[in-house]
Amino acid sequence: MKKAVFPGSFDPITLGHLDIIKRGLDLFDEVIIAIGVNADKKYMFSLEDRKLHIENAFKNEPRIKVSTYKGLTVDFCKTVNAGFILRGLRNSTDFTYEQSIAQTNSSLSKIESVFLVCTPNVSNISSSIVRDVIRNGGDYRGLVPRSVLI
Image 1 (cartoon, rainbow, N blue to C red):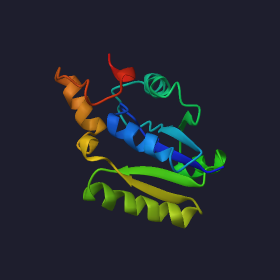
Image 2: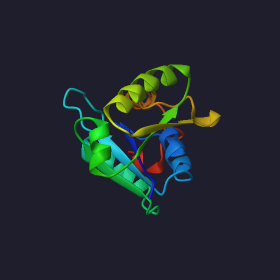
Image 3: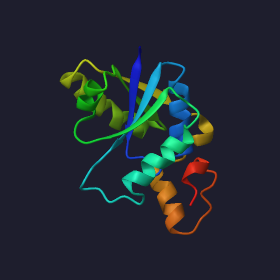
Image 4: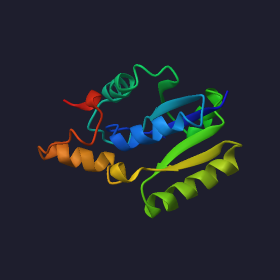
């Protein structure tokens, strides 16, 4: 069974994330959405809410699992027997950032990183943009799955 971990903070999960996850199911038997816990980071949504948003977005997809983790992503991959890390790329800046992480992960483990380029209609969406829209009272319905709507 080919398993991939799709790590992130998902604060909140966006339509861009959904794009990558759904397309990842064409490549993998199971995708584990792994919500990283970073005590130094200030989140808009609680860990419980983020997990619930994701679970509700994929409640009808049995090949999607949702989990939380602390520490290195490669260590989490080993605990769930995943051989791949799935990542989405919106632009060349994302590629440069993700390339460094993938190379470090490769030196720490045998886990491969797989990159999917976001489809054009969601390539402009990021969690930080969504948080800014929410903070300023903007309409964010076209940026996130229905499970996130407050």
